[in-house]
Length: 264
Image (cartoon, helix red, strand yellow):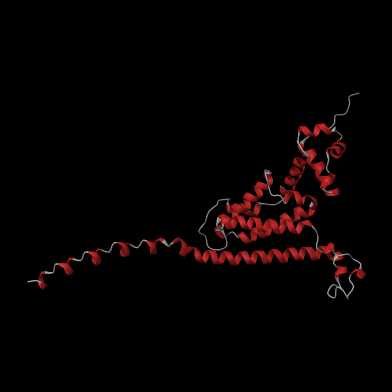
C-alpha cells in the first residue's frame, strides 16, 4: 500500500502557519519548534525557505500588507510631478477620497491581525507588498499636485495614524468595574466602566473623527498650495524683464547728447 504523500513544505505554508500563531498568541509564540510541529516537519527544513525567525515575521507582515486595497490610487496613474490640474486631483479624481478609502482598508486589514502591527511599524524595508503600498500613495499624491517632499510627509502621517489606531483599543483600556473609578479621585470618569462594552463604537468613532480632521487639514494646505502655484511658476517674467536691463533709450539717446538745433 502506497504511503500517503505529505503536502510539500512551501513559503506560503510557513507564512500561513506563522500568521496563525501570531494572531492567536503574539509574536513571541513564533519559533522554529512551534512552526515545525504545526506543519508536521523537522525544524531544520524551515531554513530551506527562511534563514531566521525575523524573516518569517517579515513575510507574515507583508502578507497582511498585501490585503490592503490600493485600487483607489489606480486612477492617478502613479505618475509623479505636478499635474497642473485644478484642486481635487488628476482628471477630476479626488486624492482626499482616495486617502480616505485606503485608510479604512488599511485599518480593516490591521484590525484582523493586530499582533503583527509592531513589525509593520518598522517600515516596509524590502517587503514587496509594503513597498507597493508606499509607491501607490506617493505616486497618487504627486500626481494630484502635491510636491514630492509633502507627499512623503503625507504618506508618513497616514501610516502613523493608521498603525497607531490599530496597536490597541482605547475603549478596552478601561476596566468594566465601576468601583475602579472613585468620584473623589476621578470626578469625570463616572461612565468609564461602560467603555469596554462599547468598544467598537468608541474606537471606530475615534478613527473616523481623527481621519476626517486629518484630511480636512490637508485639504486646507492643498488649497493654499494651489492658490500660490501660479505666482511661483510665473516669477521669471518679473526677474528678467528686458526693459529693465537693456533699455537703449535711457543709456544712449542721441537726441540728448548731439542735438544740432541747440548748438548752431
